[in-house]
Length: 195
Image (cartoon, rainbow, N blue to C red; front, side, top):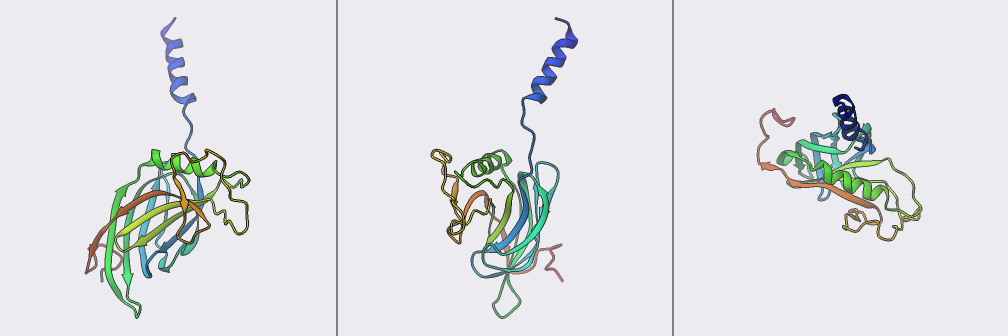
């Protein structure tokens, strides 16, 4: 065989057999699990070179604030700032994070949820950022509320147990990232909370 033919076969094998990255979310949610927060500048980068911002300002509860985030792929990195608010106003604690997200595992979890339901066909979901003190999570949901749709899962569709109930129950999510940021009693330098 000539070298050109072998090179063409090699190139085809390296590019033709791999699955291309895909868009998974067009809606973003930012919320909290333990009272009022300010989501400053929180961004999630994706494997496609894009991402979305989740700095929605004042939030309280799940799923929290919502916005159109365009087209987002599988997440790979999260960074940003958030602050715990006093009920009467002002900030109690300040937090920040910069961490990688295991994008290969995140993609497997997203695909599991996209193929989970017997009768629910939506494939474009919502990417959700939730805070609780220094803890920060990135969740993915297809928003199949069990009170309005048949959200029963196919048999054997989730052998790893990745599909879990959301904080409001009756809504399935997969947890793509669950980490802890740094905490401070004063604003971090270069944060949106620094005067």
